Image 1 (tube, rainbow, N blue to C red):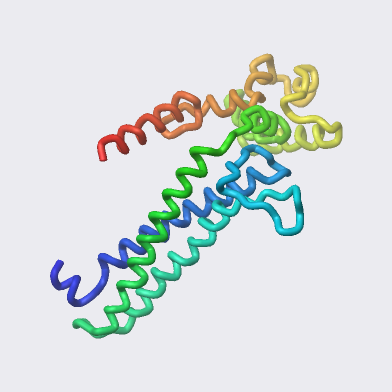
Image 2 (image 1 turned 45 degrees about the horizontal axis):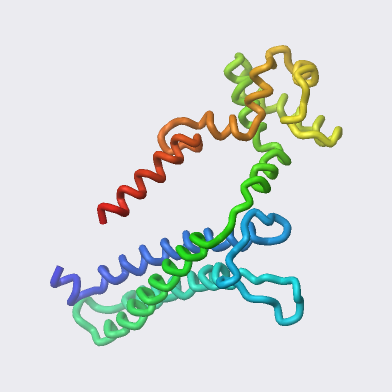
Length: 236
């Protein structure tokens, strides 16, 4: 450990690397919040304290806090690259170049603290439109894979099932429908193995609940994962 401190700055580089990965995830989450709060999605409403108005458009509400956290990611990435560049050609001994480790380290710590605190408050205060989000799951073809898997269980190869469901999607597009809106008669016109259970499988909630393995998307699995995280946080 002493040699590592004298000859290199691996412990700082490891921290900066972990910080860069953490900021990457915060940035991605920030992008989701920006997208979901847009008029086109309107899934969430961010609290006014984390937004600003436009200097020209009276109706506009800018998700400033989420955007700024997203932007701070580049700063932390830069700090990692900064120190990597300092260290890349030094001989295996102490060099005064290493004094340049302080600024990227301290700046990263400060940036992380602010971003984590701010992100937690954004999530804590935002309003979620559950009905709008649920409605949006019924306006696409996201259950097409579930339908193909169902056909495989009925004896078709996945290649055959994939091709058949593709034809069904094309039929829906031509008739301005979604898979969930198809009647049993329409389903059977594509394949005789479709039955009443197929109508249930095409529901988005059913497609989510069927993923019941550890880490899956079913309601019980998600609740279990949340509880595990809470326990970990309480132990720290």
